[in-house]
Length: 184
Image (cartoon, rainbow, N blue to C red; front, side):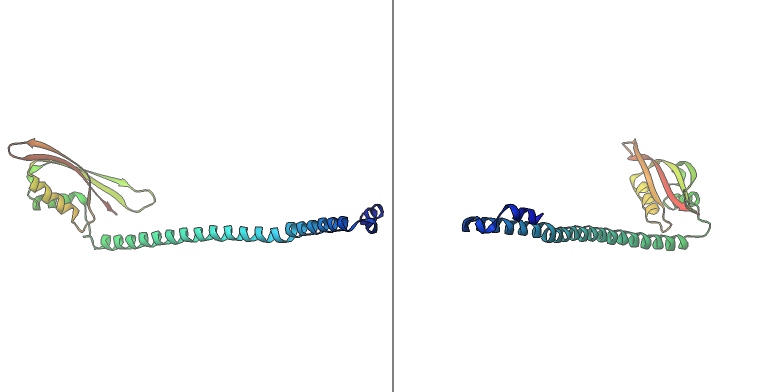
């Protein structure tokens, strides 16, 4: 192909100016080919490597965050198991609340206590819940009872609480509360 071109173009017949133009064109073509096939792929590979490193750095940061979350959950589970193991053998939420109502001097104000247990999916624990109604209690009596529930070492908590005024003059309240814990 190059020979056919040189047959038609006789370089010796070209003027100095034309020879410079042809040499410049050839040099421009050579530079273009070097850039296109040697330099551009190197820069593209570098850019691709930078994107890959950035993506992997992001993935690593996410993995470290997930590991920290996992470690925190594992620690909390260990603490939960230790507290659960320290709980009195034969513990039931119903009897605990009954005893606590006596200590808080609201036992005679308990209108009803309705226990329920729910099996937990993928767990050996059951969610034990007691709904109870306290009638005609003072704010101080209710606060003492609630503090006894929430500060108990038996991992018991109030999940719902509804308070209504019974008598404005005497400052008496009615309260319906749901208390829950996990049991084996």
